Figure 1 (cartoon, helix red, strand yellow):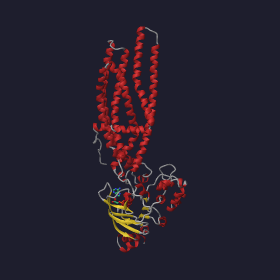
Figure 2 (cartoon, helix red, strand yellow):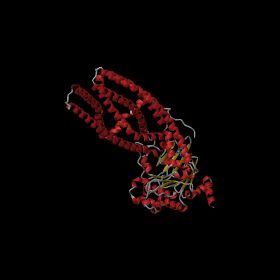
Figure 3 (spheres, rainbow, N blue to C red):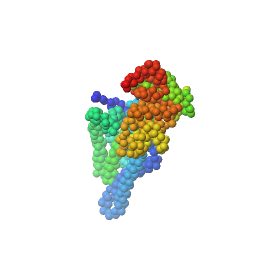
Figure 4 (cartoon, protein in one colour):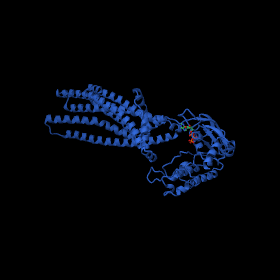
Length: 609
Ligand SMILES: Nc1ncnc2c1ncn2[C@@H]1O[C@H](COP(=O)(O)OP(=O)(O)OP(=O)(O)O)[C@@H](O)[C@H]1O
C-alpha cells in the first residue's frame, strides 16, 4: 500500500490556540446546564481546597518556630505546640475530604455531561442530510466530535483545577512576597522555558491527531470488517483475514512511528527545560539557607519559604502545563462545536403547505436533473413523467440507470439540482418534510436488518405503532412474514440477527418478507418497493404481488424490479436509460412499440423457454 503522510500540515498557531479558548464559555454554559448543583458544589469544594496548602505550610512554620523557642528557652509548656500540631492534623484531614468530594462531584458531572453530549450528537446527526453522511470530510468531523465527548471530563477538571491552583498560588505568593519578593520573579523565569516547550509540543500533538482522523476511521473500518458477524462469512471464504490484518498493521505502524517520534522529542526537550527550573529552585534554596545561617530569617521561615517555593514551582509548572492542555482541549471543543454548527440543507419551509387530504393529480417530475454531491456526472437528467393517483408504476432499466436515485428524490433524501418534483402541482419542497415522508413508504433494496426483535423489525416502518400488536401482525400477514415469525421460538419477541445473544438469523427471503411488512404498516399514499422480491422464491413472489395489488388499491406505488413477471403486473412501465426516460407505457403498448422494453422482455422470456 502506498505510504501516506498527512499529519502536521496544519499545526495550529498560537493565535488559533488562544482563539480556541473562546469556546470555553460555551463549554461552561453546557456544564452548568448539565447540573447547576454539582457545578456549584465542585467550585466551593475547590475554593476550600485551594487555601489549605498555604494554611498548613504556615502552621508548619509556627510549629518549627515554637520548637526552636521551646528548645532555646528549655520550657516544658507544650500547649501551644500541641495546638499547632492539632491544627495541622485537622488541615490534613480536611484536605483529604475536600479532594474526595472534588473527585466525586467532578466524575459525576463529567459522566453526566458526556452522556448528554452523546445524546445531543445523535440527535443532531439525525437532522442532517443523507448527502452529508456520504461526505468524507463530514465523517471526519463526526468522528472527532464523537471522540471528544468522553475527553471533555478531563477538560472540566483541568479548568476547575486551574482555578483552584491560581487561588493556592495567590495565597502562597502573599507569604513569599512578604518575605522575599524577588523569589517570585526567579520562579517565573525558571518555569517559562518549560512552559513554552510544552506549548510547542502540544500544538504538534494536536495537529498529528487532527491530521490522522481519516486514517483512524480507516483503521476502525479494518477492525470492523476483520471481526464482525456481518463480515465473517465473506472474510473467511475469501481468505481475507491476512490481507486485512496487514493493511491494518501497515497503517497503524505508520501512526505509531509518527507518534513515537513526537513523544521522544517531547521527552528530551521536556527534561532539558525542566532542569532549568530545578536550577532556579536550588539557587533560591541555597540563598535562603545562607540567610538562615546568618540569622536574617528564622528556621520556621526557612521551612515555610523552602516548602512554599517548591510548592509554587510545582503549581506554576502545573498551571502553565495545564494551560497548554486546556488550549488543546479548547481546540478539540472547536471540533465538537463545529459539528453542531453543520446545518442540513434539506429542511421544511417555514410555512409549509398542508398535506393534501386526497391526492387528485399525483406526482409530476418536471425536467428533473440531479448529480450526487461527490460526482460530476448527472445521475438523472431531463426526467419528466407523471405518477397518476392510484397508479402502479414499474421502473425498469439497467444497473446504474437511475432507478434508486429517482426514489431517493421522491423521498427528499436529496433535492434536484434542476427542475422540480410536484405533488398536486406544488413543489414537494413546499410541504413539511416529515409529513411528506410520513406519506411515503419505501423499502430499499439494501433495507436494514435491525438486530431487534421480529416485532420491532416491522414496527420501524411506523414506530408510533410499536405497542400496537394487532396492527403489526396484520402488516406481517400482508407481507407473508407472519408465517416466518410464527415458526420462530420467540414469535414476535424473538431477537433477530446474530449480534446479540439469543438472536436467530433468517434467510434472505425471510428477511425480505419482514422488511416488506414495514411498508404495509404505514398508512402511506405512495408505496415504493425497490426490488422487494429479489430474494423471494417464485411462489412467494407471485403471492406477494397478488396481495400487493389488492393492498395498494387506490394508492400510488412505484416498483423497481429486474423480473419482468413482476413488472408486467404494473399499470405502466417506465424504462430508464442513463438517467433519462427512454420509454413509458403499459406492458402491451411497449411490447407493440418494439423498443428496449420489448427487447429485454423477450430476452428474459427466452431464458424460460
Ligand atoms: N451515493 C452516490 N454517490 C455518487 N454517485 C451515486 C450514488 N448512488 C448512485 N450513484 C450513481 O448514480 C447513478 C444512478 O444510480 P442508481 O442507484 O439510481 O441506479 P439504479 O438504476 O438504481 O441501479 P441498480 O439497478 O443497480 O440498483 C449511477 O451512475 C451511480 O453510480
